[in-house]
Image (tube, rainbow, N blue to C red; front, side, top):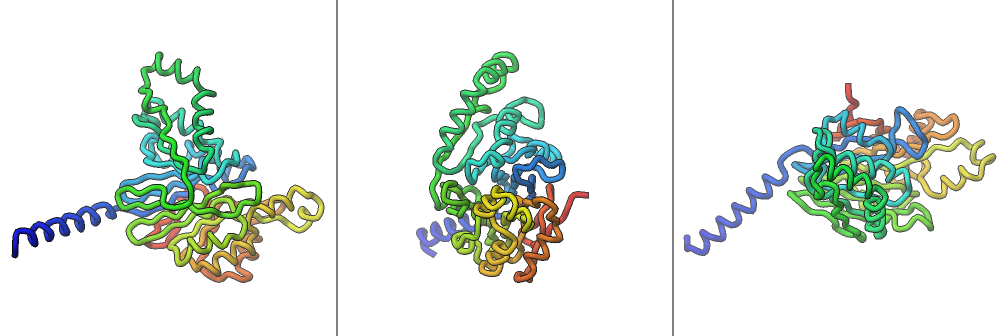
Length: 311
């Protein structure tokens, strides 16, 4: 073998080893919060943790996500990347807590580097506003506790649809969903690792783009809201909700068209006297594939397509 052939072979082997190493490790989803704006002790605000290899990523920041991360014994400073779908408050009200508490020095925080966050245009305005709003707190803690300023900075990435994050074998793609005419931009995210695919629909009605991004996905996490007929008749506000979010029938159509290996409900709105049984029954009138109604702290093994609750 010539010198150059040996060099090419060595380079190719090195690439194989790097790829193999990058894609070693788990591919796991934990539903940190499966709720809506409704305050609930059992369904915290919408937020999802994805662990892929050595990467830990949080998608959306609903009420109480720091409590859920603490229950999982994951320091807030250990999150590698953060992703926002849109600017509704129930997807954002946990962000200040995650950002500020993650800067503190006890083991639950300990962030040493800027909080890296990705999301739609307008995100820079948000992170600049948070820094200004909590400016006095940052001054006091910097002087009093000597917390490193790098740990409270934002590394903000305003992104458009397409690949927005690639690291150590993980690829994250943002795409437009359909959360109503006024709620734009609004994103879903597709996460790929080790030949497996997870899709988070974000808040959306039936969306052909969600279907496209989810074709044959290993796991599709989709929002859903159940509103009894009497509420739709008597309260116009509930009709407005249905104009922004998928009904069980809408979600079933997505699952039928996309054919994921496992369909999971999160961001679950059970309005009035609606129950999980109502949600399941209405979905399964047309969709007969694998279906899980998400619960807070439910863990999903992407490789095995299994979902388990903590003991």
